[in-house]
Length: 111
View 1 (cartoon, helix red, strand yellow):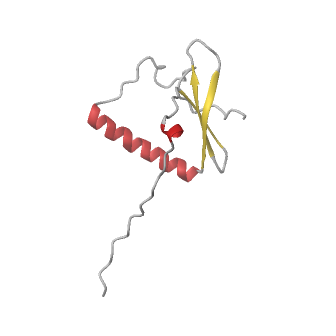
View 2 (tube, one colour):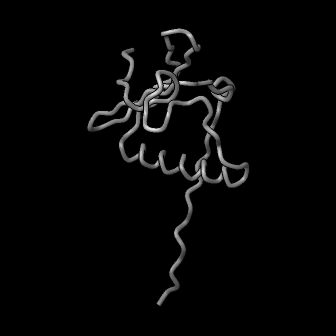
View 3 (cartoon, helix red, strand yellow):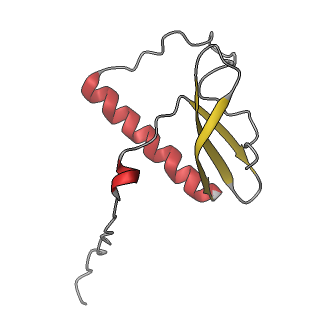
């Protein structure tokens, strides 16, 4: 019997151009979904205003959204293990919605 070989890990080369590397600041995320896709809109809102501008929209399949959720959870756990618990200051009381910040109940903005 031939020895079982370990599966080869695929290596992906990712390019990052200068403009994208600058990043986009977001203090408001709007998440919506259809049966086939999730829509993540990243926006900025200035406190005291009623208007937010979407600066990036990411569209992904439900399976990729689940992978993203798991990756975010794992990274938050690693971060807190290294730097301590992330405190949420000035947010709404537990179980309530904030009129400002990251929320999951809004439909995607129309382009």
